[in-house]
Image 1 (spheres, rainbow, N blue to C red):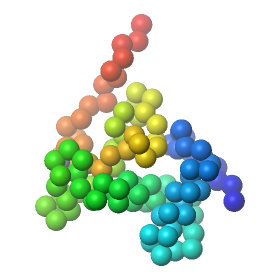
Image 2 (cartoon, protein in one colour; image 1 turned 120 degrees about the vertical axis):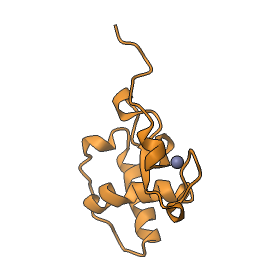
Image 3 (cartoon, rainbow, N blue to C red; image 1 turned 180 degrees about the vertical axis):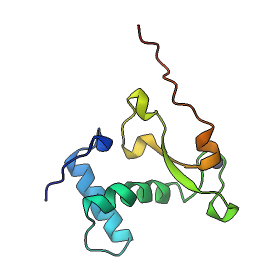
Image 4 (cartoon, protein in one colour; image 1 turned 30 degrees about the vertical axis):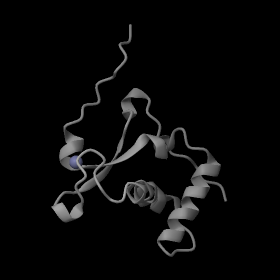
Length: 107
Ligand SMILES: [Zn+2]
């Protein structure tokens, strides 16, 4: 099976992607996921599952009435990759307080 990588999947190898797909499918009790399902929900689900469905910054959960999102630790705009290590579960209030200003100055 071969997946076309979207730009959003920068930094993800085919092997990792396939492995992730299998893990997500397993957790959801499905035999397979389409790439669309994966891009929409798959990695987000894996990241939230790893982070126990809690905001990385404040520890709140859905039960506290906030919406959880998955956020790039090193911002996408600053060449952060879409890999598990660079993704964090965050609530919307914490996420919206973050800026995407680059940490490096370009000359
Ligand atoms: Zn938070």
